[in-house]
Amino acid sequence: MTEVLTQPRPIRLKGRSFLALALTPELPFEDWLARLDDLAARSAGFFLRRPIVLDVGGLPIDRLQIRELVDQLGRRNVRIMGIEGAMPSLLGSDMPPAMSDGRPASDFEAPVAHEDDEAGTTEHVVPSDPQPAKATPSIVVTQPVRSGQSLFFPEGDVTIVGSVASGAEVVAGGSIHIYGTLRGRAMAGTTGNASARIFCRKLEAELIAIDGFYKTAEDMEPNLRGKAVQIWLEGDAIKAATLG
Image (cartoon, rainbow, N blue to C red; front, top):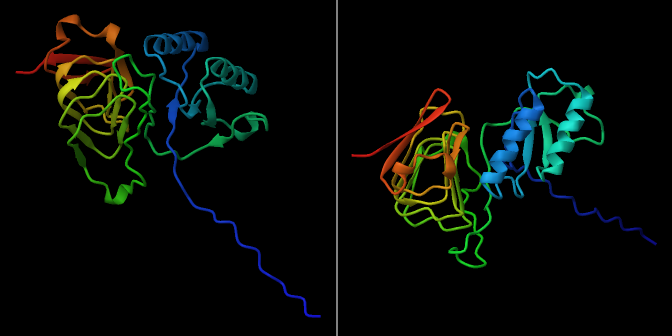
């Protein structure tokens, strides 16, 4: 009897990059967590279902402090998928793994929809498999960004010929140009570009951010709402002025 050996079908392994939001805590941690709570309270769903990397590089922190910080974030439904900047000896087997060499970027998923949003619609507009070496410096979107959509382009500028609905997000490595009403969130300069700007024909934003510095709707100047504006960064302060 001849024994026939069949080769098992190999497991297919494919490389794939996923994007995460990096949190960089500051001392004292109690004050930093209070500011985090304030952001979450004023921008509902900001951390909802988002993978987070905790960057503790340069902080004088020990194993117990890291564990307590991860626990505190977990109680706030902030899920830590990895820790960057910590010595491997500080991370136990029951803690998120050490991570390094992350490419600066941000990932933002759909927030909670508002009453005037389209019911049951949750979409993501995310360019797949970006290749940095062949990246286009800018993209033009010729349709509105609807509630529940997240438009992400870390390679450069984003121009939207239309409006950005409440509950939608636009994230760009460069500047953001919106030829319509900005009701959702616009985050420019997310790869460390402090010179990026945000332009829109009508400002009704829930949140604006440049290079990691942000303002929520409650922080924006009331006299600018409903106006055509440009928004830029001066030092650590977000500035805004009307266009024209």
